[in-house]
Image (cartoon, rainbow, N blue to C red):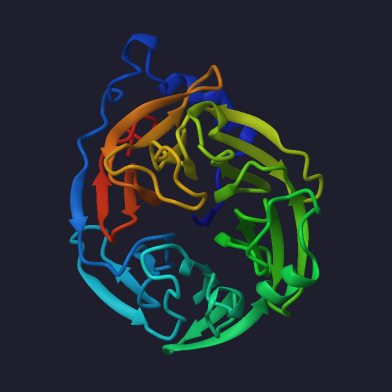
Length: 333
């Protein structure tokens, strides 16, 4: 989930069809997509990710409150921060959720670490420098003071911030519980950019001024409710780009294609916030008809992805990173 300068959405959408799989091949990986390759194991959980200014992957580890730098070629791991609040509801959700860079400075997003869930830390954005974490914005307190509409089933008062993207001199942040996208400044100001219904906004990506957001849809997160929408911050009128992923959790714009990540089939009767069933996740690519075609399946509860030089790097719930090379739409590398 990272901010990059690429072609505007109109050009991107025009090019999607050239790389979409034909209808007869939608059940199989499109030509050129290699089988997933295990790159990293042993992370303390998985959530968001970004690509740093040095070209390496940076991933938060929710259970431990650490951030690790991953060499995308070798998988070598180096812990670069250990000052974030650890997960309070171990084995559930929350902790260090995502990371992003402004220039060369790293920032991290935390969730479900405050007093309302038994913790004592701040739900919000931290500046991370020299293994020191300083609160930049207290999103949890702001959310308590500015709850979503009263007809929402809203029971975590500090919300559940999930993903962040660098935007101007601050960030865009999704809250999958309050169902909204926030703008957060380095001065600690928070405002609602987009209030949605019960659609569960999770991962997001930014292409020039266009924001793409993955919507998981309401429980039980059916494939038809998994959507990618786009909007501009100033107008905040979302438009449907593609749909058809079970528990859609992230979105990434490649060089000439738009990719989405589905965590997989939701367990029958499970409470909201539960992960999908193991080994049912999918990496998807948008087609010219507004659908999502399968690039790779059988992924184990993916949580985030990055697209780097035509390859996808997929982070999973239990702390693995998988590489999928030669994505459709990125073959002229």
